[in-house]
Length: 414
Ligand code: KG4
Ligand code: ZN
Image (tube, rainbow, N blue to C red; front, side, top):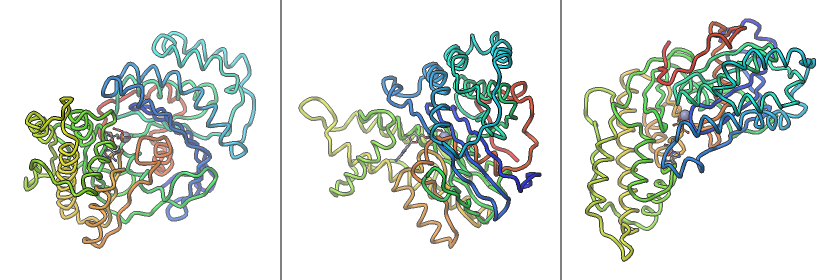
């Protein structure tokens, strides 16, 4: 952590639009190393999950339009929620606002008409808040969705004359897990000081990765999925069982009911790639095994898969995922000689997985950092925090609106 002017508190606005959550956060950070503190001024997540559930997954052009509609009103709400914790300086002035709108009229207006329109009508943007930097997710994620957040950052940057820093979404999930509590506006927190090197296991709808975290900011991907991500597998299997999107939490609930009622697995599913020498994951075969099993599943009078069979299958699927992830996590810990474990991404909300990883940490005698409930899914607090913790200004630029581009397939690196 080498932010030059580390004594001065820094207010960061985080923007996250990589998938189907529109999220914004304002944090005030101070100091460095063990003295680093983070105060949340406000953090808001607007989920589009219900809209996408009709499509059984995230529909990119819908996500793009929704982000465009949501961002400006969400920022207004964010600033109201921050209340007196957020200070203001001057007014923008009508002439400057007009200049900014004209300068983006050719590019952003046709690309993101909802964003451009709501931006041009938002009177509250005329008061310049004391924000030092904007941190925006540049990838990985859905490119059309990422671009909306980036374009919003560029417009705010030009209007308020604030630099923009691009942030890797997966780094966000890593540092988010070091935030020590649920989010409470106004509370000042120290961030967990995870002993390094750490192994981070990132499990989300789009990714399944093992990362060697040498320090915050220095990452090496040491293992990943060769096909489906684990969250994707949860969602696809949930769909095969007739559960609504996002299927992960619903499937996990069903598995929990099977455990409580003592319902056993109706079939044995594979534990993919356990015992392979590398740190690769593969979940598509597991999904196919479920597909074949459902074809032979007993049906009720209505023709639906019999409910106890579904519960038992959900339990078996969750166990197969747990054993696979845990086995690879152990291999990675051995390989790196890790001093701690960091678990991140939406799937880390799963309590059976959390318990298993907790047991592994205990066995290895090292600490584990799991995200709190509000932070396991996509949010902007983690994006602002990644920018603030990463410290050095190499990526930041006064003219962020000129060089930041969406990188749908971005990969973590040093
Ligand atoms: O990190 P995230 O919010 O978005 C991406 O960046 O992908 O992860 C979303 C994924 C979805 O696949 C969702 O089904 C899964 O996380 N998920 C869960 C649970 N809660 C969310 N999977 C299993 N068990 C859960 N409790
Ligand atoms: Zn995510």
